[in-house]
Length: 334
Ligand code: TXA
Ligand code: MG
Image 1 (tube, rainbow, N blue to C red):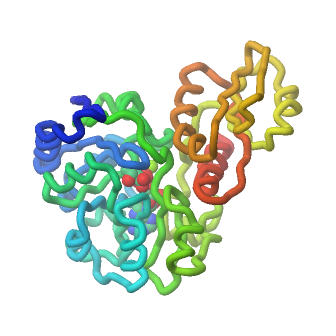
Image 2 (spheres, helix red, strand yellow; image 1 turned 135 degrees about the vertical axis):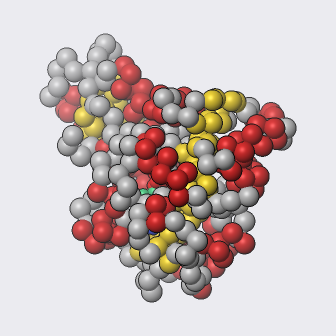
């Protein structure tokens, strides 16, 4: 792994680093890079053998398709079979940004990217480094989150290094990501748009633009959506600790059931205190802050040997919906 760092002050003068990273992409190698959601592990989306390297590095099942990242709308035309009218509305409203759209694919997209399927997921990230990397590479970049399969998505370069250091990867460190949870995935390949994964663009924002969409598919066990988006069936976002979701008022009662256990409480109650040595409180100002830090807190808890992570439930509104979705997935039995 080759790790280089770009700080906020020199984002404008990061040219030579991005140029080198783009060369790695063109050579068919892997580049881990920041987006506004989480770090991605990228390869030239048009190069089948480069894309295969992503699956090997992550230990990702080959039936789980990848998102293709583009930097301008022209790139979309060659990757998809058609652009439905609803797509144009969504693109105008949300790109660049954390919304991934699923289209019918063109013949240019290799089977490894789509896991053999006839659709392709595409997004235009809203991050200067991601955008410059795609532009300088001159190709669309296929990129899943840059964690090893099953681990929480990386929101810092350090997380990528923890998971993937044994691999030949060019890692661009540009600090913590803004949103902290992955993009929303919306299937627009059939007549009614279907939410496959909630994320950085909220359901309310989408419905404001295109009206009601199908959301039942997002539940953890929906067989139809698993068939559409195989990634849903795999265990995700999981720390080693047991994850429990509860209202803040019930925290004390739950804690009392686990005497001696090492417990972390993620809560919006900023005045929550504990004198117990085995209990740590992680106070958050807002649901957005909780979303931004959830995955890094999961990783810290793993390092500290936390046995139980108690997460305050929040209303499934705005980013709260994606947050609760990830916490619920993390709380599935090991
Ligand atoms: O924010 C994000 O989306 C990040 C950054 C790096 O862009 N990427 C990301 O990729 O989260 P990944 O691979 O970890 O999650 C992609 C999800 C998976 O659940 C996958 O099954 C689904 O999108 N997906 C990809 N292609 C699809 C397709 N053609 N049809 C349905 N679902 C698809
Ligand atoms: Mg992922």
